[in-house]
Length: 397
Image (cartoon, rainbow, N blue to C red):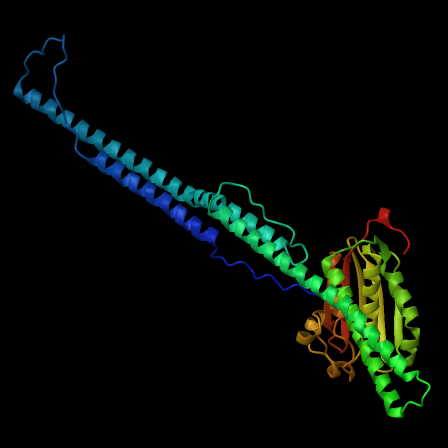
């Protein structure tokens, strides 16, 4: 089935908030440090007078000359202090500008290092789905909060894997166990009808009706078994098969059903190179279900268009049918078990509701997907995408 679109990431992410926090802390620390340094530098300095040892004192000077000399020295000192203050302020401003530019970058780097384990956990968790619950995060590192979170997720995956496995085993076991009483009921009907005494017409009609219902239950149980096997992922008979050949074989086997409903089949684009590798039995069942769905849920004198194509990486099987305009929301649910469109599509409500869900499970087990689309002009488009088999692995079906 078509995967839901991933929501676009928000601008206000945790990394963005950490970047602002760390960058702001660095900038505030730098501003505080510069303020303290400037306050200390702007405080008054003491001027002490001392006579160098070993030097004889200068001869006495006249008072007017001494005052002029002192005034000149004071002016030089004030000018030197002003120049020093200006240089210190300029240096502080340059340092503050550098810190203002570097603090967001350093904050982003620090936030990235802090959030790196969480990104690893997020990527690994997105990779794990219902079909590979055996995988684990197994995050290395010290026993901290991040490691506890990863271990908790691993425990949750362990419980989910056990639950899924138990569910699949129950479906398979129940399907097998129910076959025995059904076979007994069918044999009892045959014995009752085969008695030498004349059998009332009502009894014969009831027996025929019961046989029809038993056949429907058999098909339902067979669908359960195929669904459980596909979901279990036990691809024991792996080989390279051609989707085009499987579709041609399925059409030939259903020629009588197609002729009975006077359907027109367009199958001129079934390419042999649309090949994939996997379970031959399950892939054949997948193609059969898609074509059965197109035949059964179709109007008399309707049409079916089937194509099997390939590109560089994907083998694609597309089956389209005509009919009335369908609701896309309802069509998207057809890949789930027991979902049917019923009379809205074909005027009948036949089928077990497992056909396309089996197709979706088999496609997923082989690394592919099922897309279901309501055609704008009416009818249904079923597309199965599977990984293309390597050319060196190709072999006849």
